[in-house]
Each structure stands twice: as C-alpha cells, then as structure tokens.
Image (cartoon, rainbow, N blue to C red; front, side, top):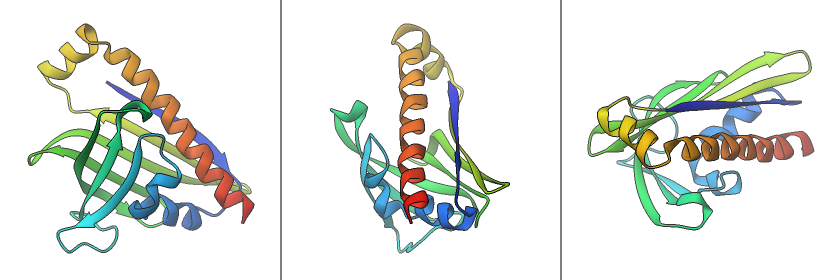
Length: 152
C-alpha cells in the first residue's frame, strides 16, 4: 500500500524544509501525529537520527507512540523516515521538495513495507480505506504547512 499528495507553495524550499523536519512541531500540521520528540541524543534531522511520534489514529484513537529513523535528509530537497516495529521498518514516509517558478512543489508520500501481512491487511481489513485516509491526511498536512509559509 502506498500513496502520495502534492501541493504547490509560494515559498522557498528551505523555509518549507525547516517546518517539515522540525518533528517537535508536527502537531501543528498533522491530523494524526499530535507531538513528536527526538530521542537517543538526536537534536535535529540527520540520516540515522531517531525520533518518536505520538499518534491518535484517525484523529480519534487509539493513541500510541511510534519510533522512527531518518532515512533521507537533504536540506531544501528531501526528508524521509521509516516507522519501526522493533528495528524493522514497517512504513516509509517521504517528503520531496521541487523548486518551481515562484515557489516549491511539495510531495508527501508513504509506502508500507511489502509483506504477506500488509497484503492481508489491505484486502481483508480495509487497507484501501486507510490508504484513502492517508492521502487525505497528507493533503491536509501539506495545506496547513502552505498556510503557514505563505502567511509569513
């Protein structure tokens, strides 16, 4: 299961990148992850850095913590991280920032790690509804970021 959303913003990529990579402020933008913090001594984005996010699934619950590891970190261009189950990646989230005339095109995407379990989840337990929800929530997240960077 995977999906993406793209929003054009009238702001420089560096300004948008700063908001995306400051995981401590994710609650301003995400409909599900209402707080996050760097862990294991990390203080900011870098490949291999870890953080944990506090999630309220579907905006209502259940509520749980996830541990994440940064997999891509190129200022002004991309930021990616894996959601971990133990040390195993189960979901990959990624932001790509592409400069355009007068601003930046920002794409947020997710991809569940392919497995028998994710296939069963998709077909037997309504994973297609989750996929739609993720795409809608990514669009909401990007729109909220756009509102902040374009208001400044």
